[in-house]
Length: 156
Image (tube, rainbow, N blue to C red; front, side, top):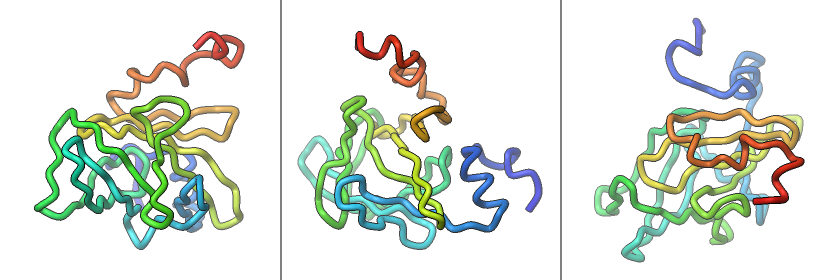
């Protein structure tokens, strides 16, 4: 397997799951439906022009590759609203309107919340178990909610 950290930035949790050979999944936080199929997380998205499309994201946290149909337009800096492909519920998080929220779950049922940017080209992903946060992406500093202590969050 080699040194995984040299090839792509991945979360510590993902690295541990991969090393142990465990399967992990992604779930909609609303309907708890499974949205990972094979090597993709499947979303319905809507762009600023109200066009909808299917967007496949890489399930490895820190890998920002995606696949879409060529007819679906998205431009750098544009907001894409992410939806669950099963229940059609918006995945906009309560933390920030630019972040979507999904759940990462291992084969034993242990769950972490994952928040990621809905802005095209913005690399910001946060994985949290409620006590600590793993941050990925060059643009993650734009969302300072995760950088402050619980004591001060009430002021935001």
